[in-house]
Structures are given as C-alpha cells and as structure tokens.
Length: 107
Image (cartoon, rainbow, N blue to C red; front, side, top):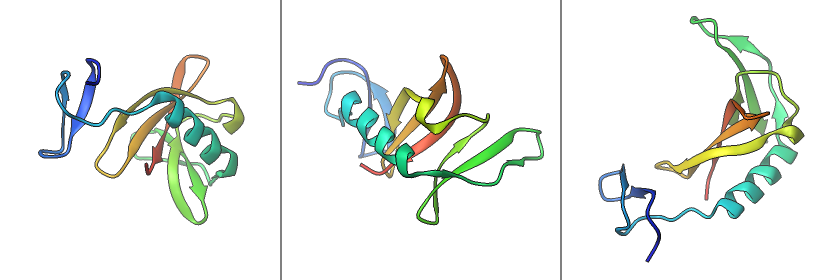
C-alpha cells in the first residue's frame, strides 16, 4: 500500500490526499527523466505576455516541452515539485531554491 500523500485518481481526474488507490510517482524516476529531457532541450525565443511575464519555451524536436520564466542554464535546474497531470507529470524547475519554470513529462 502506498504511503500518505497527494495522488491522482484517474476516475474523476482529480487530486486527493490519502493512502487509497492512486498513482505513486517515483521521485528518482522523475529527476532522471527531467535531466535527460533538459539535456536534449533547447531554449526558444523569449517573449513577454500581456501581464508582463516573460516566457522562454523549452523545445524538443519541434515541440514545446516546458517553459522558463527567468533566464537560466538548463544544466543548473533542479526538480522542485511535481504532480500527475492528465497526460503525464508536471515538473517545477528550480534554481537556487526558486521556481523558474515548468516541464511536462509523458510517463
């Protein structure tokens, strides 16, 4: 039985806290896949949205796999937090303890 924590329940597509059935996501696997993806990704052209928030797309083979809000070296980024999404895992990317972007993993 998995331990207590936030889980993704496919039946309703919602998050819940508890030890009931759900998808347990292994942190080591998320970190490994994030590192592999960041090693292959390239930064796109920086743009600023209507609210003044900068966006730097992270591209891989023509598709966008993530987004940075601050300029950062991809090799220096760490996994902050992550959670199950309908299509995979959303990963917060951090530098020096501050979240600077998001990455989407298909696992």
